[in-house]
Image (cartoon, rainbow, N blue to C red; front, side, top):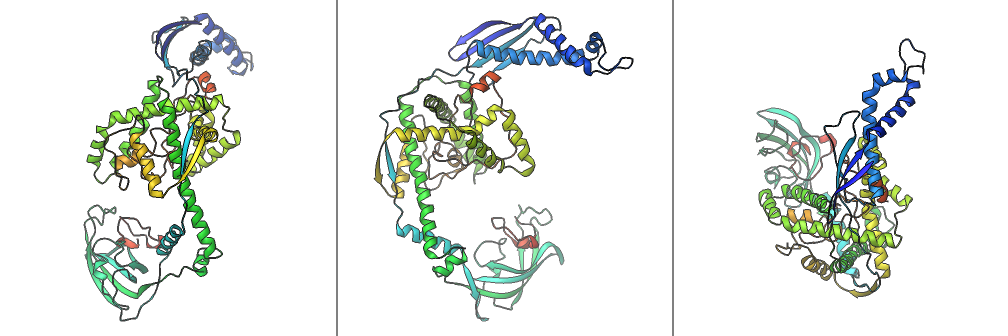
Length: 550
């Protein structure tokens, strides 16, 4: 094979490979000889069909197979001989004028990974902001649980149902005197003022008493999911079985036992642990941003634009999806579009940090073990529908790039933990509000992050929530060939382009989309109703009351 370099500009490389016709012919002859004993043809004993007839029958198929294999092996050899580390899948163009019996020519274009010098990991200084969990916070969490475990007791028969009271009702819905499917229920609980049923339903039941019968008229919303009910006026014949009033929940051992625990002390212990885990996650976020900002400030090397573009596409797709789900999608999309250049800068920062962390990890022997990788695969597979799990497993096994994508978040976190262990860390107790403020301050001052239009920490828009799926300084591509999928975790009051510095649970997703792999050589380098009366929202109707919900 002849190798002729046609471009060497920055990280871009291009080569023309010439594969002699004689090499292809030899391989075809060898393949014909290999398959001939298995060919059956009338008039010949099994295994005795002449090679020239085998070639006449199957030559075109064998030729195409050999050419494809030769091209793949030639690209692998190019990577090895030229000591190339592709950043992404090389672009391969085959000479369209090629004919059997002639030399085969192909053009290969790629970007290579830059030579990154692993920084000195000594002398890193970090501040850990810790949030002690107070008894008052545990009490508040306990009250929150109690508010979600409301219980009701029967009220006097003379009691008129008011805001916050629960009524147990039977109802039958009809349109123009004809009952409709799913519009009937018995013993359905409804809390007045909960907004659980379609508009106008609950309001007309305010003031009812136990045993009362009443017919109300409501209109189904125009966007109701059931076509036969959209915008229709319906009548509901209602009988009130019981009016109930909320009873005070006593936070005692009995309450804890109703939740399956030994007593109230055990419940408080569990709540304290959960609060500590949550604040520890924020602490890690803040420390990780300090660390990555220090690394980013000291390194500015060219990065492959193909990796930047792939990273940007992930950010951009997530932003567009989140903006489309915003209450005002047109405005949200317009806002996102106005900061497109900022997000591209974020993508470049991620790639650079990813390469830097990968180099640190390789230099210091950081690895993801086979056992850890198996656990990752099993956890990720569980998040697919049953019918898609096998396809996911096959993808991970057959595509090194897909496996690298899955491994990348854990690998990065292990490198970060390695750096934490080497750093000089001082600790300072702060309140949760101070910790969140520190995180947001870093969002606004971090290198290569959008400086304008920083969102309120309290009420992020769709654009901001979308960006918060991945942090500008956290998720990045590395020379493991890994492009991380957006992790799904709540953003702890983070600003527009920043979040997810902590642990990243794998997102629930559809069947995996196959990632383009680099050549084999590069891959080796790489080493997620109460009947029809129900309102669209949120509450799930029991199956037996399967009327259409909005």
